[in-house]
Length: 178
Image (cartoon, rainbow, N blue to C red; front, side):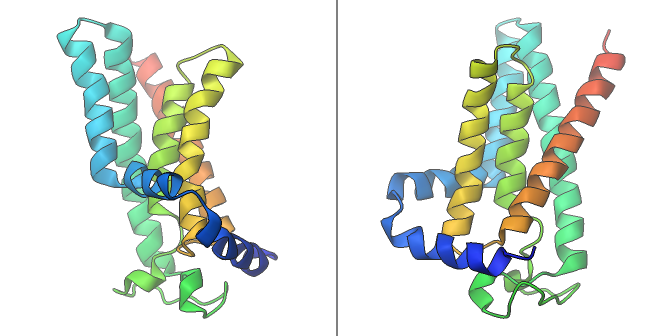
C-alpha cells in the first residue's frame, strides 16, 4: 500500500512499450464471460468424453469463479476505491458509488484470471506444469496495471481471494465427492 502510487506510475509509464498482444490477451482472458466459457468448456469436455477428472476440474472452476465473482462484486461496491487513472490517489474511496472509476478494489480481471489459473494449477503435482497456468493467470493482472485500472494492492488482494476460494472449494468438493 505504501508504494502503490509509485508502482502504478511505473506500470502506466511502461504501457506504451508493452506488447499489444499481451495487453489484449489480458483484457479478454480476464473478462468474466470468457471465464465462464472456459470453465464450462472443461465441464462439458469431461461430460462428453467421459473424463471424470476434467469434469471435476470444470466443477471446481465454475464454483470458484462464481464465488470469487460474487465476493469481488460485493467488495468492489462496498469499498469504492478510486482507480489510478482518476488521479485521486491510492487513499481515495467512495463506497457504494455507481461510478466505474471507483471500482478498483479488488480487480475483476485479476480475480477471474487468477482463479481459473490457480484452480487449473492445483490439478498438477509437477511444479513446471503447475507454473504454466499461473503464468497465464498473471497476464491479465499485469495488463490492468499497465492500463492504470488498478493499484498493485488491488491485484495482490485479488490473488489472495482467488487462492482462498479455490482452496476452500477444492477441499469441499473432495470431502463431498461420491
